[in-house]
Length: 416
Image (cartoon, rainbow, N blue to C red; front, side, top):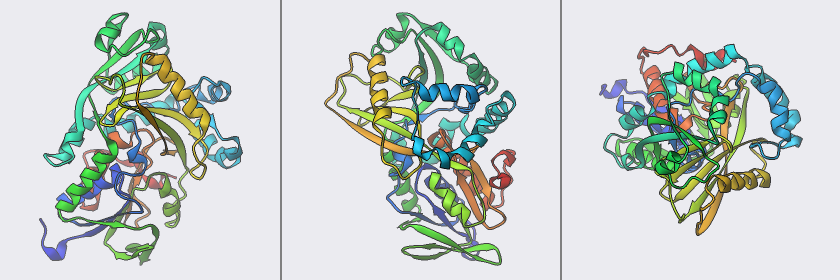
């Protein structure tokens, strides 16, 4: 622990999984930490994710051919991709940049960048929670990908080849052996590609809240306020301004997901970042729960056993952050759940809409913004929960002058 006069005071903006992880690692390094969010910890995007610690999630959405397949997917009512057409004029510049990366070269480059952030997820989460109150939420498990048959699995050969490059190869289970492993599956599932040594969180919102409790127990400070601006002195951060006062600091961390775009703009950084709207349904008191999480390839959704029931999360919708939930994505998600688990019954259901922060190149922003002393830690798209602890550890190291054993240039926020 450094001497008191050497302690840095860091303001972390955003109390989701990335922000709370960063705050804990900073506090462990001896920094004074204030964590600011407009809501209580874990109530934003971190509340509603699929809960999977998906170490093998190294492949971006923008795989080769998406430029041509995308319009077809949008017009297919049975494909889980939706667009609020009134939002298209605003979305178009980002969308064109996003689709420009749907090449083999860029897909491999992005996969190489995502791998170090997610591949050791279980280890990073275990290190983060130690023996604290959040530890009970973290479970080690398999993570399976459900396909209709071997042909459907082989259609994903490109994706599985990239996972193999990253060190992840599945065990295949076919036919009736599928139902021996997981009795809940109906006949629509004929093959499982099983990834060992993965994990999940049984209550993502509760997990982040427990991590925030850990931070407070370590002497960190939690503040409920909305950040409005930064105060710079000589081009470097000196205070964070909020609707609840001014907070002086030596450095700051920006980790408010898709809402980071506006605040980054106040520092002169124009980030091509959009919301990829995602939905979940929690089936409460279900007639069964799964043994482990599963990605259902045909429906592009993840089903995860959680404390509150069976959570089925997925679907992609583009429509910005202002509009409320749409009916069609939820309707399709329910249809795909019924096809996969035909015998599922439950007492009630709860629907949710959240906003995945999607940079145009599918790589998170991890690093200092223009020598301002403000560090970006956002833009994790589908890997926020999986990669949050690793990101927090990297940011804490950068702030404390450590040299990471990882080339961070792929995540440089100033690349835009």
